[in-house]
Image (cartoon, rainbow, N blue to C red; front, side, top):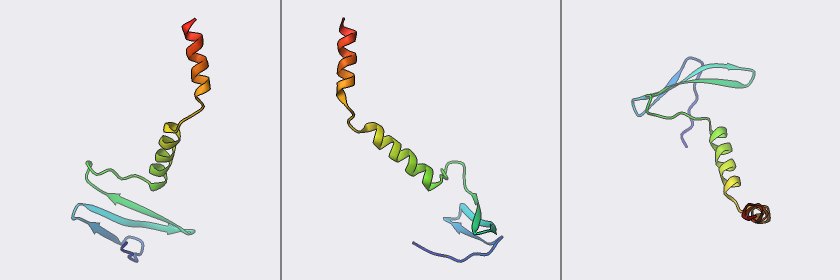
Length: 76
C-alpha cells in the first residue's frame, strides 16, 4: 500500500485517468473528490463489504424443514 500525505486542494493522479483530490478536512473527517472515467466504478468499501456479507448469508444453508413443510402443503 502506498501512503501519501496531501493537504486540502492537493491531489494524486492514478493511471493518467483518475484524480483523487482532498476537498476538505473538518473535525477529523477527510472529504475526497474523485474524478474518474464513467467506465470505472468507484464504490465505498463498506458498501461492497455489506453486499458481500449479505450475499454470503443468503446463500448459506437454512433450515430446510420449513421448505419441506411448504412443499407438502403444495402437494395437497
